[in-house]
Image (cartoon, rainbow, N blue to C red; front, side):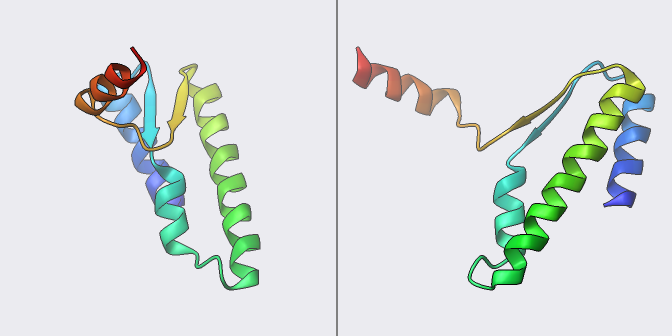
Length: 86
C-alpha cells in the first residue's frame, strides 16, 4: 500500500490535481480477501481502515478532496434506470 500511496502523491504533485476520485475499492478488496475465512474479514477491515486513514492524511496534506465511490455505472445504464422510474 505504501508504494501506491507514494505514487498517488507523485501524481497529485505532477498533475497539480484538485480532486482524487477512487472507484470500486471494496470490489477489489473483496476479491483479495476470501470472506469465508474468518481471519480474512479482520484483515480486510484492518486494510480498509488503514487505507481510509492514509487517504484522509493525503487529502489533508494536499488540501484536496478524496472521493471514494462504489461501482459507478455508465450514463447509458442510468438513462435506462430513470426511464423505468418515469
